[in-house]
Image (cartoon, rainbow, N blue to C red; front, side, top):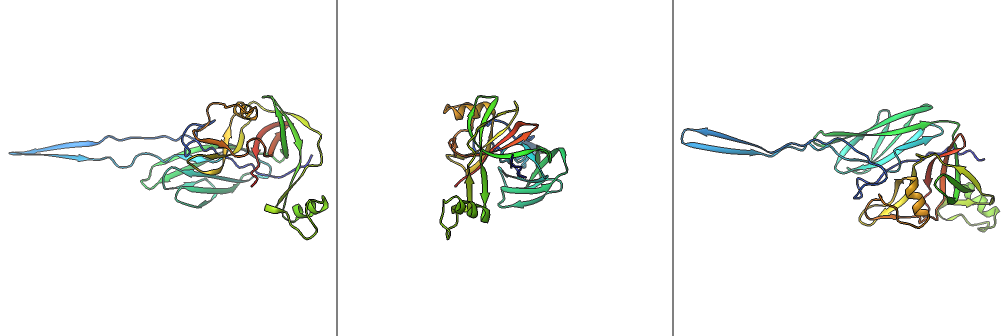
Length: 273
């Protein structure tokens, strides 16, 4: 089995893409009513209405799953806010690509961690979302095509995902490209072991798919449940998906599987242009 030290990057797009998904990134919200005061003096009455200031915390969306696994503890999370603001994570370097979109890079030691993603808007309102991170050097991360899934057992066709010079060298060796050519899009998938393997899947395993939204972003990583994924693979229409949701891969894309003690605990679809 090929051991790949890979990071499965997580996020859920329900908050920013119009509707509830397989799970919610929730944050507390407070409200304030309009205040009206009346001042009366002899022969004169004055009424003053004061509108409330912004007291609504920003909504945080983490792209992918809120359950993350890492072999080496090097983690990257990305997401968006529903209003301009700043995101912070203890010990993380935050890159704010826009006033809404952010990426966080950090490291954690082996173990199970609760990573708190905190956001603060321009009015000082704050919200937070918890991400569960497991760092375990004994995890196996494998690249596969999924040929079947019955809800508890996954049938996987193992392959190898190569990039850069290694990809070009392998493609030349396999006769896919000429000696003076390079692979398009800087990747090559070698699939020379066609023996399928049946792998047990843990009940709470999150599945991260590459998705698009009719009136929103494309391509985004969106978490779905095992039941929803099974329905999609069977070309059904499972409930609970965000409005305007479209599956970018349509079941044809390969996956990264994270295995712990031989069982699949995380599934992440690989984006291919």
